[in-house]
Length: 115
Image (cartoon, rainbow, N blue to C red):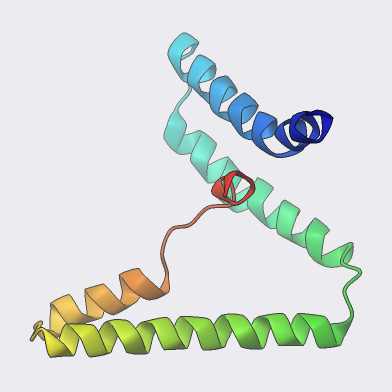
């Protein structure tokens, strides 16, 4: 039981706290969400990425393997989506939309600990 509580505290609790804080902030204040989103996208996001890249302790060979696997996976998903779309006779615009949606799905990091 202690293991389950530790997993909950380390993985799920931060998700619920962030979601709850966002809900309370949105309900009780009149923050301009567009401006807040721009701050996160243009300042906080790049700062997080820079910090992660500079503090990275993975060897270069591991990073290379991860990048090659990610590119191969995206390419295979794109080819599979294209083949399915071609098989069901989608027009060019719909085929491109299907391939792009399958290749670059909006899968944020909040769901990873939950999965």
